[in-house]
Image (cartoon, rainbow over all chains, first blue to last red; front, side, top):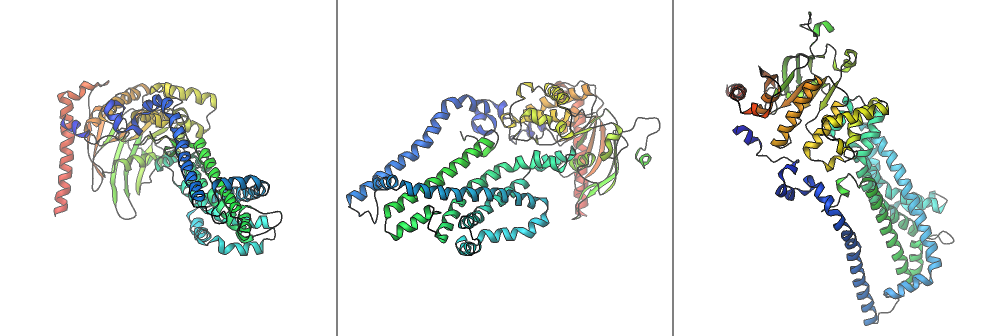
Length: 304
Length: 274
């Protein structure tokens, strides 16, 4: 019997359910799903509330301090505008800034969608064979490490349509995270599960649809989050370089132009819109990811 | 060709598993398994028992067709595993980990082999429900694997193997990661399934007690290089209850296996010295 007792010396990674109270307190993630369920109704709303409340408190503190410094030291608005002046400019210049926002959003969304489609297709190509990946990966990396500011002038010369040129620039910036994350995801399949599919004589198509794609989703959504931000950065950089006037002007051009005119409050207002756009994109991606993975993937499960 | 495989074919039903001097050497020269011969009759519960590195999992995976033997032959009902259908037989494999799809419900996991084989929906529904009832998880059909304990996840894995209505069940240390109490429980349930479904089971474990409790026959293996050292018949009646484990006969089987394991490892040490 001593051998039987010896066997238990290494604690099992799961199944702690049998251990009762103390065991489930030590390994909450693995053994206390029932516990988490019973706690959820009381805890969850409070958590979401905190998530919004704390950052808002920080924002109120910072804005108040900013306003206080500007009025206290009587800083001129052409150096640092106060938050109130910034908001006033946002309202008075809304017609101009709103159009610019729409334009930047258009470039960002177009290039993001393009990057997602292209990136996913390329990573599907990569996982078809190691030879294809080995042959093409260095060029994907080359694309990633070459600063877009350096390439953008060329693209803007080559592509006649300024909107298309900007979309190409932003796509190039946003592409790589999608490729690398999705490729990694498509490859990171549980080897035993893969062996199981082989045992069941699953076709290549079945393995792709039922195993590879679901396994890749968490990585893919990670790529989306990074890439959505990069698409915005790419769009802003492309606008700076293109510097076009006329109808097709985005927020970056507004910043540039306001800078020439020393209209610093408008610069700040445009900057605020760019930041808010970035935050909105990130939140949207996080929400999508939660929608798709929320029920099963560890990265999206609540951490309590 | 097929005749070569069935050494004892005259008048007897074909062996469920026939291994003829199959061995496995990896390209780097590591010998995972020396040539082994093993014959398993229909309805047997055979345990491959041995320490890590004795090639027991390698042998099981070769039987399943997951690994190719470097040389030698393996036949299931006189057919190579790729043409098992022709013998009208099916096999199922249970991994050490539950190996479930984390994104799919218990029910969808159990249904997977039927979906892959294109079994019609109505028939699949019935078979999935039956398999879940067999392992006592009907209530958890809609749960995700994550919400279940390790033992319950293993039950899902077993239900997934039963849903194809296999004749041969290959199990690679299925309960190795579970705690002792859960393991005993599942061992008992497995024996019930085995006798109810008249399965042939090949079970890999490194626990002497589990091997003696479960098997009609224990195949003792040793490591470096992997080989079979002894086969021991466990000539005890079924159903076996937990109190079988405290009988003197159980202890003597366990001792005998322990001794042969000890002798094998000593031989290794002597060889290493010379």
